[in-house]
Length: 423
Image (cartoon, rainbow, N blue to C red):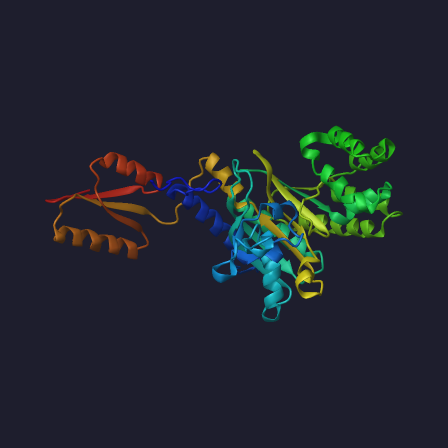
């Protein structure tokens, strides 16, 4: 039986032209984040199954690629439950591994710790454009800083990176706080045990609209007057920092936590607006929920013109590290949707700006050893001068060969023949 040449469903082969773009984007992100003081780390792609299924990852826990035990530990025939045959899984994001990493290495790290992590993650999701079962995430996180400086730095660094990579695309940062969401629901008399259900419905706002959210809340058994009061809070909220302050005044009598969150959020928005050197819109969006259950405070998402869905997102998760250590540690992070950014650039026909000239030296089949040595010597001389030089044998279809090399950024060609050098 012939081996299968196509990649596994949801995975993909990356051709050289796309790989150039991927490397370019990754380098731009890394360079920007390093300038903001983030230190690059690496965590294993495999995590303990107990960590991955600890109810920290929301729906992503349903999408884990699980790994069977090995050797004598694996007893498929005698197993009664999945837990008896599974002990690990591929990571579905970089946040949970980072929390384990910090818990294990905090004594050897500065405080606060600014982490930069870039790597593949895996989810057994339904593949679609810009979404794969294996994909790269680019995360920055600040651990050990309880102040709003963490959110400010994360927003400024992420928008600086996006502005550098996609200067032609306008983008919007939407921002909210989980404590404001809870305060709004509490102010309208909803029971705390119903909050999760309400927020799941609210999270559909961009797909089904205000009327759809209203209908679904009522269908779920919530009273019409109560739902009207709740949704009225959203329609009356302004998108700027002043709108956040007004929301704080509305919620002050019912929730001190929400009032403080509004004060903090308006401070973040004012500071980012004043300090940023990148052009983007910053909007308070009280309908922003973000599905990950580990978020405890500020949350944010970035949308980009011409692309449906978000291209980056994150928030504060002050309780996750405490699951490992027993002591709560403030933590906040922002993740760029690397694959979505690459998709945008590919759709736009983006060409990586070349830092060095790229030349191809093509020699005819059957050239003498002396001619081949000459080719290599001249190529090495060019390389020492900073030129990228490819040495390859000339194909029969030389025209097609050159066209393929031009797609990879080669702009100059030299041809070497048996009897003479032709430029």
